[in-house]
Each structure stands twice: as C-alpha cells, then as structure tokens.
Image 1 (cartoon, rainbow, N blue to C red):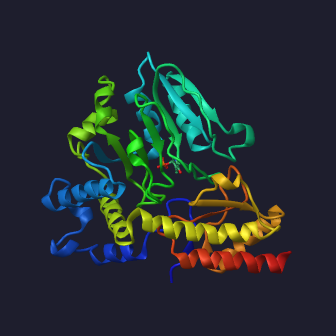
Image 2: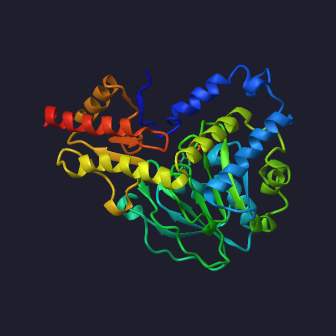
Image 3: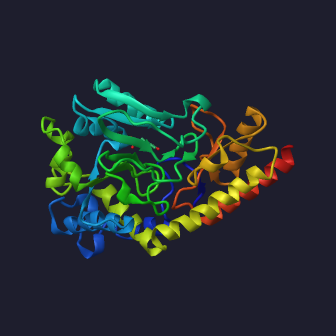
Amino acid sequence: MRVHNFSAGPAVLPEQVLKEVQENLVDFKGNGLSVMEMSHRSSQYIEIIESARARILKIMGLGDDYVALFLQGGASTQFFMIPLNFCDDKKVANYIDTGAWSTKAIKEAKILGKNLHIAATSQDKEFTYIPKTWQLSDNPAYLHITTNNTIRGTEWKIDPDVPSDVPLIADMSSNFLSRPLEFSKYDLIYGGAQKNIGPAGVTFVIIKKAMLDKINPNLPTMMNYNTHVSKDSMFNTPPTFSIYVLGEVLKWIEGNGGLPGMQKINEEKADSIYDVIDDSDFYRGTVVKEDRSFMNIPFRLPTEELEKKFVSEAITNKMFNLKGHRSVGGCRASVYNSLPMSSARALAKFMIDFEKANK
Ligand SMILES: *Cc1c(COP(=O)(O)O)cnc(C)c1O
C-alpha cells in the first residue's frame, strides 16, 4: 500500500505514471529494451525527448519563440549559469530575495564577482512574506525571482511587471505547472523537476529565444545555453530515464485538465489544510496569509515536543515527510500536483484528531 507522501522533494509522483513506467520498464512498448538501455540518438528516444520538449511548452501556452531544455546539475547549477550567461561587467544582476533558495542564487552571482543589486528583500521579517515593491538598479542584466519559497511556504501570487528591456528570470522549482501563470512575461524559467513535475536528475530550463543573442560567448561549452539549444538538448547524454518519466507526468497533467485542472485541485488540497490551521489555536501558520503557498504548508504546534509527537504519530498513520526543513523547524506538508486529494483530506482529519487528543 502506498503512503500519503508530503515530501518537499524528491516528491510524490502520480500512481498512474508509476504504473505506466512499470509496465514498460523491461520492454518499452514492444521495442524489446528498456528506456534506460536505449541510445539517446535512437529514433525511439528522440521521439520521447522531443514530445516532452513540445508538450511542456504547449501546457504553458508558449509558442516557438521559446525553447525547452532538459539539463543536469539541478536548479543549483542554474544559480551560476544565469549570471555567467547573461551578466557582463557593464551590467548589474538584480535579485529579489525571498529567502533560502533565492539567497543561494544571489550567493553564486557574488562568487562570480558580478555587480549585484538586491531589488527587494523580505529578510526583515524572516522571509515570511513576498515583497510587493522593488527598485531596479541602472543597467540591469535581469531581475531574478523565486516564485515559491519551498522552505518558508511563501509564493508569488502575481507575475511581476518589469520594463520590457529587463529580462525576468524565475526559479520555479517548487510551483512549476501548479497553476496557469503569465509565462510569456518571463524570459527564462528553470527548476529541478523533482518537486512538482518528475523524478530527480533532470532540470527544466525554458528560454525565450530572444535571450540567446545576449549570451556571453566565452564560456565552457557545457555552461553555455546556446550549446544546448543548438543541439536540441542533446549536446551530451541527457538524463534519459528521468526525462522519460517527466514526459509521462506532463501527459498526466494534460489528461487532468492542464494547468486550470491542477490549480483547482491544488487550491482545494491547500485550503483543506489551511482551514484546519485557521480554525485552531493549536496549530499556527508561519507566514502572512496573502502570500501563503499552495504547494508547501509550514505550521507550528504549541511546543517542539508536540511537533515531534505529531510527526511520529503521522508516520504510524501512513503520513510521511511532515517534518519541517531543518533550517526552520516545525512541520511542513508539501501538497504538490501529484498528491491526491485523499492524502490532503487524511492529513486534515489527522490534524483535527491530534489536536483533540493533545490539547
Ligand atoms: C529544491 C529547490 C532548489 C534546489 O534544487 P536542486 O535541483 O536540488 O539543485 C532550488 N530552488 C528551489 C525553489 C527549490 O525548491
């Protein structure tokens, strides 16, 4: 029996996708070999990667002025590839710091010695909100935001407006494809697949083609986005199996109403847990309500002892991975796309029962 999996990442995948993968694991659709054993240059594999690249843009509603890449090294590698490619000595890398991952992205630009400007930060209140205003520097190379803070549980509810000559770049690792966004406002979108759209090992990068002319030509081959664009994301061996599973998750998203469908169920799941928190003086939310994430729900109990007890009793009840990130403590429920409604309902009920028993 499968457990209720509230992991922040690598996270739950749709059971239907796992079964499809299982059915085709040893002999992929009558080809007589596994996807893992295929040459990445074979026609069977090219069909897999090309349909995933096309499908991701289709789901986002983007046309052929964008290109989708599947790279390696995680979102963490994008933290330095972005300033390497797009920020020369005359320009300034602009960031909005909403904590944890955006702080790490900023650190990489700093290591590279880039001119740096923090356009806004919510550090004053321990990153418990999303800044509503920001101030760009002169000569901005780009503005970088993190659309969902996986650790703190804050999420941008708007797609920020920037002047048309300023590229908008977003780390969407933990809320990508969770609801419709104005994706065409963004010039580069990236993230690790392992939170919301697939297994670990593959990094999605969606780039507006107009960005490709701005790339620093003097980079190691693998670090240059143009290398990967010109070779259709196949300059070297891609993470073939992870891309295949990601492609199956994309089909599952399409089959479940696309992004409007994801939004509907994601809001229902998140609301069912936020409602318990709001109706109780036992559980306490940790961020301002208007910026609460639909994906990661951190909460505290009256004492750390009760938090420990909560997490361990949850496991007995087949609810896994409810411990908060080690940097902030407390509890956290991640309710990504693939988490079934029944898991969110089970947690909400467990929270109510636990409160009654321990108040
Ligand atoms: C998990 C996470 C990362 C790090 O991703 P890796 O693929 O492990 O490098 C970066 N940004 C955000 C918002 C994340 O949630």
